[in-house]
Image (cartoon, rainbow, N blue to C red):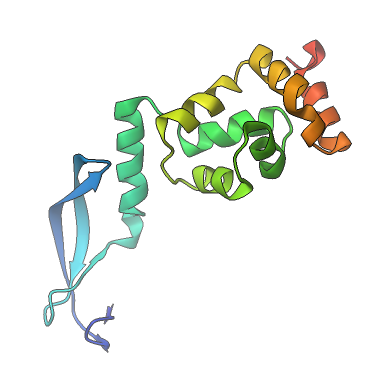
Length: 151
């Protein structure tokens, strides 16, 4: 393997280590499969494991009852809304919705607001009050998705 610290090819050893992450003042421990450079000790997480931070965030979400990235995307898509339109209705930025759908950790207040949109009655109310902020095409698509025929 190539060691980026040594800037050279090295025969890394394979180890499993327990790592701690501080997420919003809470310590979450995770066992990671690592490749360790024998020269400098630099570690690399085994690619097959995936991104440890994503996994730690998912543990935090599960412990605190927060929506997962896939839930946020599903809620938005069930009303046929783009990230821009969904963000507009919620008073957030498109970048915020995008980050949440890519796995960034939301706070409780954003979670509650997005979670409320899973309820058709709440979504109708949001569209009634803020739908004028959408393009006509996006508003109609959301209204159609909310029609009784689509539920």
